Length: 103
Image 1: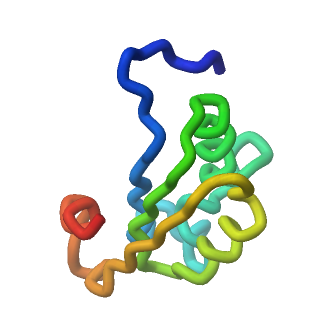
Image 2 (image 1 turned 45 degrees about the horizontal axis):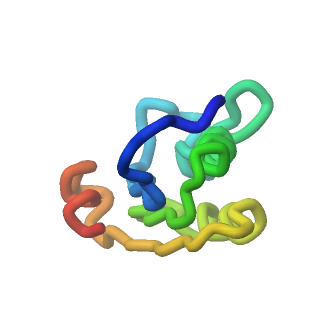
């Protein structure tokens, strides 16, 4: 993917990764939806690859369900990027808008 041309360089992104991913059960019973493998690698890795090509430096991740798995993955794969976690304690009863509000 070619870097986007823009007058205003975006260097920070927000990822919403707090949900249970119930529509993808049984794939998400013991793994967050963002770690589901598509075309040979987790969705999260596809995003990280795109962020790198676009010059993203900081990622804010709203987490909830199986947060520790997301942290483990990011610790191993998000080199040279600043990562901030925002835990949605109410992830089982709220939606993406609430997770976004928390960030």
